[in-house]
Amino acid sequence: MELDRRLLLAHCTAHALSIVAGLLVVVPMALNGSAFKGRCALFSTGYWRTETRTEITGQPGDVSHLVIQQWGPPAACQFATFVGIFTVLYGAAQGWRCLFYLHGRHDDTLFSSFLTVLLSVCVLFLSGGASVILSLGLVSWCDTVTDDNTRPHSCAESQTVPLYLDVNTSSFYTDLNLAQVSLWCVTMLWLIQSILAFLRLYHSHSQHMSGPCRPREKEMLLGHSPSESRSPSPPHPAATPTLLV
Image (cartoon, rainbow, N blue to C red):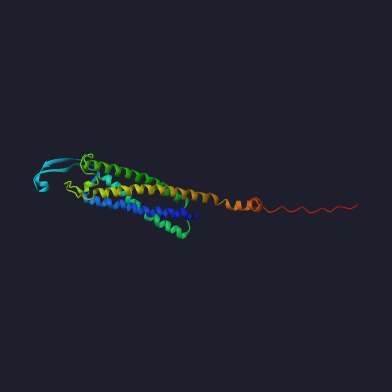
């Protein structure tokens, strides 16, 4: 297929940005999972309790600490991580293909362009679902940490407040919020990739349909029809002599 450099360059840029955005999803989620010892903070339920315990601080007095009733489902965190990993791997593979096509000055076939559109649309819905799950899960965790906004600190400030859990909560909001923003960026990039893939499919279809018609259009512009150019011209009848009286 004839190459459209503008579409291909735009697609290469989208793939490069998707690699960066995917890494900004995977790395914070991995750091949060390591800090929480493999537990998922999304959709976790708990409550605050105030009691006098010297075991918590080592000093007598009233201490407020967070009690986790149930940690969130691991699939909620794993789904977002999976979308990020797939985006990085797919962006790297497709970015290499784009560079190969730019060097070879050709584009995908019609069938390959159709598969690219189908895959982009499917992953668009997956990344959108993962973004919604991550956002709702973070809101649920923030409600638990702030006791439905009744605590004197916000969700962002809660990572600097001792929660007295058996996990490291010193950067949970930074990690999860960065992963949330990056995952929404991944969703937007998948939307852009779906549009660009459809435009490349339309371009390939146009090239495929207009290819056989070009010789015929050239002959029509020259004033000759294909049938006339193929069939030999009929012989001229011989002139009959006339008798002069």
